[in-house]
Length: 485
Ligand SMILES: [Zn+2]
Image (cartoon, rainbow, N blue to C red; front, side, top):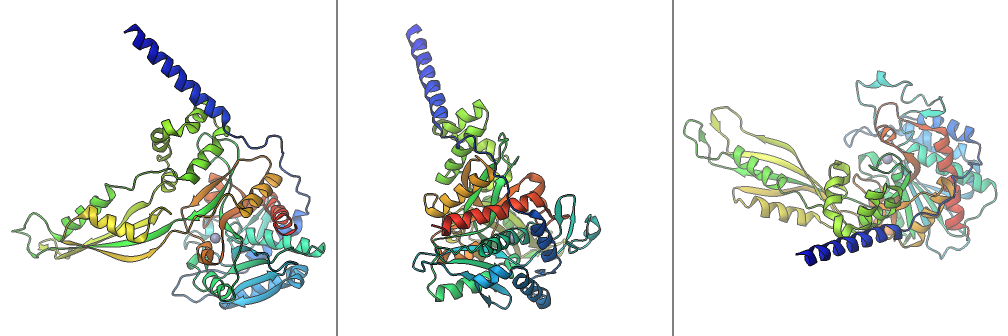
């Protein structure tokens, strides 16, 4: 008995030692590098964004035409405001109101890089106009911030980029490879006419990108529980989606003499069959890379846990899953969104329909989602129909030139922050370009906090002038790094 206790104690000491040893071995980001001094005049950057916001380039809806005057106004304003950039690049208008800028490089055989953005913005929700401190399309600069719809999504980011191109062109910089700046007109409506048409055009010409950058994650702060330091998250993939229609049928009749089930209860059971069996939470390589990257920034206990996922994975998963967004990045999500059936309180319904919306993790597929639902429902009275779907994007590598350049520019401009891959749980124009690019990164060189995330599509959307200038400085650094060799 005593020997057994000693043996167990030795084992516990050994495992503990191993766990702590692994925690100590996790690579920390290079220490000491402070955020760069942003050596550019932020005044014109802010003034230009304010002007761009005043063009009401609103995506109202798929059934409503866009305001051509506003889009053409913004397009002409870009040409006027960035003369050096416009002289250095060729411009093409695709899809009616989308921009394809090409900055030809010295070496045209090297694969180009592409920057993706969008000219359109979402409308202001009716009834919320008077909640805005400054009118949403006035383009006001106040309190060190630029206010208005699009300040973050996506005018701020593309203005920061155009400012960088303008400064570089003015300074006589000539890229070593082709650089494309692609600004779509309808990202907020799915991108059929903008990014879709641009990608088609480039594909027909045989353009193949080494990598592309688009909106997505950024330098997040106070978003990861237990991590105080900023962390740069680069979205290397985006989820797909599938909508299933579950149609339940049953004999009708009078409600005074019912069978056990009606179409309504059959549909309800079908919904529960899928929602009671959510997809399992899983760590993929990118999730593990993310957890290892943040580990050095956490407290001792958390660090030991994150360094030893072979032992602690179930615990870590359960903890992370308390946050719906974190859970969504580890699985295909299931959301029952609509249920309809029946017409009268005393009539047995013959048909009831439920809609279930899935957001598909890159490890799953549209067909797989449908097959799994059929298996779980397992009821011949229920027909499972696919009412729309989009496959998840392919995953972009983290060991290539593009990821390395994004990492290096982030550390040059934001200081010694950990950089980790992540998954975009929403959608972006990037998915349109996966067929013409070896890699797609969804990453904005902006600091994102819980408060700033609420501003995307929200009330009082605004961006700090310092953040805008930093982003522009980042793009300049990135272009020199990626196309200045
Ligand atoms: Zn956007």
